[in-house]
Structures are given as structure tokens and as C-alpha cells.
Image (cartoon, rainbow, N blue to C red; front, side):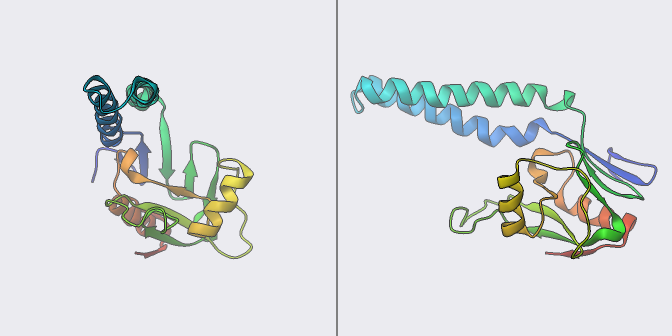
Length: 177
């Protein structure tokens, strides 16, 4: 039982740890542009905008990481179904399966570095409650994952295995890996 599992439900919040790889990437890219610019490998016309761009990415990532615990509940699995912070969700009887897969499209994420996506696939014709994301975003997610009800657990306080176990326990849903 994890620290986020209470009385027959699983609650997932954002995790600061999920932002660490992104922050390291932005910090390394910023430092790289600055060092290559100072040593004359890049001209100032490339080093300054590159460092500014990746430095801005670092600032945004740090701010998001600091705000992460205060966002609240990102995802809740309970006896009724699965519910997202955006208001989207579905009853368990409408969920056909839970898919745990790598990131898509495969041609772009040929190596997902262990990052997983947990998708709650609905039965044909079953309505999802609420909407998560813009129309074009939902269409792409349906094409790539079979649903728009999905989450990437690397940024949450629970793992893909925790979500799969909770879906099986609470909703009796088949998990496909």
C-alpha cells in the first residue's frame, strides 16, 4: 500500500522528481551554449539566443517543479471509475482495458527511455465524461493510444504498476502491457 492509497481509492499527485531529468537537460544545454560561445566555437549570434532559450526552459521547469505539490489531485481511481483533474473521466463499466505502452509516435520516440503512458481505453460507443485537452490533442491521443484518457506516471507520485494494480482491484479492468 502506497502513501497515496486510501480507503479503496488511489490518488495521484504531481511529483517534483519527474521534473529532474528535464531540468538537467535544460541546465546542460544552457551551460553548453555558454561555454561554446565563450570559447569561440559558436558566435555570439548563436550562443546568446541558444543560452537564453534553454535558460528560459530551465526557469519554467523549476517553477513547474516548485508548484507541482500545490496543484492538487491529478488523477483519482476509486470504486466508481477513473477521474482526472481536468474533469475528464469514465465509469469502470465503460473502461475496456488499461494499456501501458511507450510514448508515441514511435518514429519520434524510438527510444522512450523507460517513460510509460497509461491509457484508459473505453468500450466502443462508451462516453467519456468531460474533456481533457484541445480537440486536436484528443484526436491525436485517440489515434496514437486509442483514447484521450491517459497519463504519464513519471510526473506523478504513483507508478504505472500502481495504476495497473488499482485499475484491476477497483474496476476489474484488464491490463495490457
